[in-house]
Image (cartoon, rainbow, N blue to C red; front, side):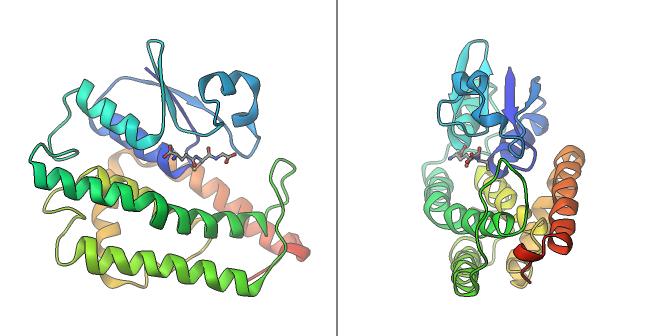
Amino acid sequence: MKLYLDFVSEPSKAVYYFLKINNIEFETNIVDLLKGENRLPEYEKINPFRLVPAIDDDGFILTESIAILRYLATKYNAAEHWFPKDVQKQARVDEFLNWYHTNLRKNSVELYMYRLFTTLDVPTLPKFPHDEEKLKKLQADVAKSIKNIDTYFLKDKPFLCGDVISAADLMGFCELESHDIIGEEIAKSNKNVNAWMKRVGSYLEKFSAEPRAAMDTLKTLYDNSKKINGSYIHL
Ligand SMILES: N[C@@H](CCC(=O)N[C@@H](CS)C(=O)NCC(=O)O)C(=O)O
């Protein structure tokens, strides 16, 4: 099994963690997004959408992180808590995963891209002009998603869909973890979401060295760019 990923990509990390935790053998193939490797013709053959992650399981190529997680869970008979068999528990996981794409993921990635593209001066990336109003709107949208996680999904539970970790926690955690790179504190300022992030973070810690190293590298680049690229500076 080959996994195509960039360790700073949120859905890539979710698949990586899942493979590691479930002790599934795989080969790591880095597709460096900052270098634009996702747009190389070789990679387009793997994923015509030019996105990571993707897997190649002995010729069976699959894109989309959630589809990949389900495929791996079924094929490798992963512990039931990832995708519960109980119909209502499963529905709760699906509820979050469906909500995630058009809410948490959409809002979070827009803020993340805004921060990166107004700050980094990397030839392969677009450059956005700073726009205070836009930034405030993006932050407010993320804050709304964080609030939804707190009051609707988490409520008083340790994990998003109950007492045990599921695919929902994996996707949600990886998305919000990227806020460290761009110095956003929105998730941390919500007590329950912050506690949940720490809980999931401890669960994944054993396998976090590679994603953490990649995120730290990008964070250093981001922080230095903020200092150097006057025209892109924003606080
Ligand atoms: N829905 C996809 C989203 C994948 C995605 O957005 N990947 C980003 C990295 S986080 C990417 O490859 N971006 C490259 C680009 O937009 O050029 C999934 O869940 O796998």
